[in-house]
Image 1 (cartoon, rainbow, N blue to C red):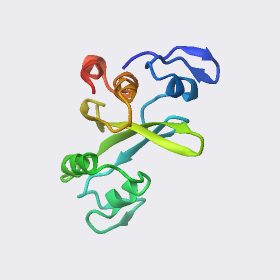
Image 2 (spheres, rainbow, N blue to C red):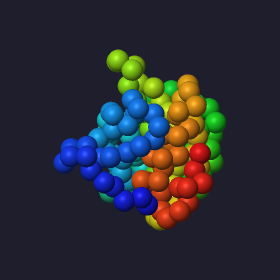
Image 3 (cartoon, rainbow, N blue to C red):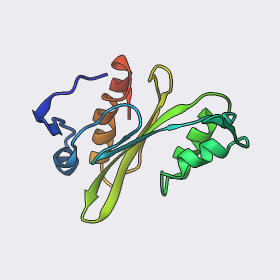
Length: 151
């Protein structure tokens, strides 16, 4: 994972080549996170049926986790369903920026739950700069040098 540096106590330094994303980013980090340009959440496995000492039907908890990701492109969703179809949870990170009130999703990164090993990246943004966003942001959520190959 790439070490963070700070422009000030409330603003992480990042250089993706996408000026709007870089300016809007306050932090990119691992785990369950809601930040200016990142939404990260654990997606539980389809076979995970227990939460807070209650039992749920197969797939219910995964569906609950996914409801927070609106308009996810089909290839991203398909890969996520494939990765969580057994007993393995996955961290899903969405990287985005804002154009006025509109959220522009640049892409997604998926990592293994236990060790944050890179599993997949997807660039979904409208411009070539979105690829550089996913490539650079992935370095802050994936272990080791694996993020270097992202996007």
